[in-house]
Structures are given as C-alpha cells and as structure tokens.
Image (tube, rainbow, N blue to C red):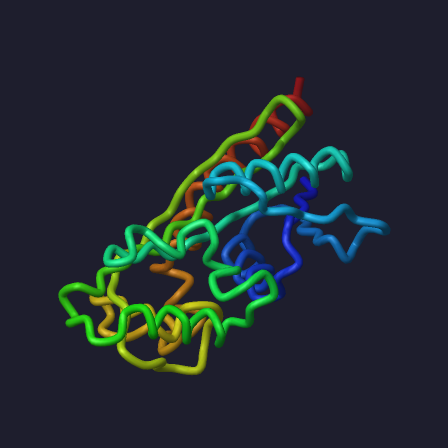
Length: 205
C-alpha cells in the first residue's frame, strides 16, 4: 500500500514515519507530487480539518491519504488555543510566538489551574466514500517557562506527569510511546493493518 501524508510539516512527517515504520506501507508526502494542492485548515473542529486535508489529498493523488489536526486545549482558557493552536499568535506565527502568547495569558496562575490536554485527530481517506477518523489524547499541565530542546510546537510548555518531564525533555522514542499523536497513530495503524489484510485476502481470491 502507498500512503500519502497530508502535511508539509517536517516534524510531523518524521514522527509519523517513525511510528508507522513497521508497516508494509510506502509513505509519500506532498514533495513527491507536482502542483500539490494547498492544505487548508478552515474547519471549526480538529475533525473537520483532518477530514478535509485527507480528502483533498486522496482526490488529488488517487491514493489512501492520512491527515491529522492537533490542538492544545487549556482549561483556564476555555479550551483555547484548540483548533487555532498553530495560528494562536497570528496566521504566520512561529512556535516561539505561540508559546509566548500562551505563557502571557496564563501568567500568575498556580499549577493546579494550568491543566491542559493535547488532542490529535487523524483522518484516513482510503477512497472518496471511505474516510475514517481516530483520536489520541495526552493530559498534562502548562509550565511557567519553556523546558527542553526536543520536540516542536508547544512541547517545551507541556508537562507530562507520568514521566515527570515536558514533551520537549523526552527523547523521540519516549515521546512516540506516550504522545497524543502516538496514541492516535496506534489506532490509525489498526485501520491500515485491516486494509492491508483485506487487500491480501482479495489477492488470494
């Protein structure tokens, strides 16, 4: 099976390829195609964005396509930045700008009021009429200043209690076992394995 990742984010591509490395799947990205369409995030939910990107990619390539949308939901901010996590400080905001805005909004709040959840929704479009979604979650808190140099996005601010470190303080191997994206991809792998087994069964008939 060939699978197209509907993202241009090199960090996401690296994570997804690592987690799916044990599958008999050839993973492609937009760079493998000419005139790849723009992947817009105009939905009001993570689910809408993931489905839209997967569908656009599947329709353009004619191949099964995987898209994710991820959001950091902070309890004290009524779930913000949520679906706008990547654009929290502006449409072209950097990771650092988003992090600084988040810290400024939470300034002075005690630890017990800094609860947050990372949510990742993955959509796989196997065909135009066959789109399935899965979700992964990681619960933690937002620290008062960045910690760690690994990861990307809000990882330096997201403290994960079970391991006692922020996501940016974890090795890629550690993060890929416990993160929201890892959990969503584990469920996505089940869908892919099922499709692979279906394909194998069809070849035998």
